[in-house]
Length: 145
Image 1 (cartoon, rainbow, N blue to C red):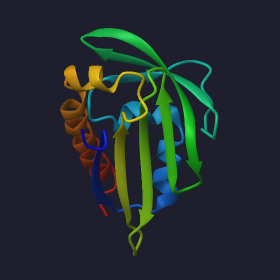
Image 2: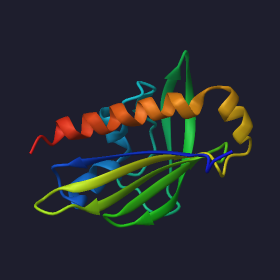
Image 3: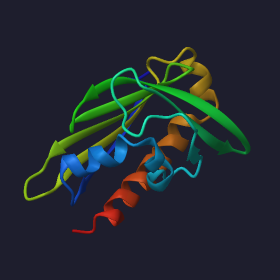
Image 4: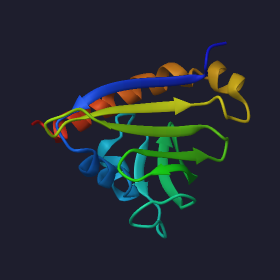
């Protein structure tokens, strides 16, 4: 079965603070999303996320839809994760890598999902691994160093 977590890591030429500021503002999520599914933030979202904050996104995977998220892990400039209604999480871990660089790990964690088997049967682990790789490539291009 495995851990039901898909993670990818990249070193980005930006400080953890710069990257956290980008991630903590839901309006930026469409700019960094490599999956092509995140369209825009929904009205009413906070401009800066915090533990327990709720925010919505307009999405498109075949058909357009809306998703609501709740921040469930939060450590300023180091860790942020949000949970979808299905229980799965998107987690970002930022670790200083010296000289203004950060090791960024993005994780799709479906170990907490209401139906992890359904997620597997629909092919989301592979699809999300590809999206994470593209997202990290976007971050690397945004901060060329």
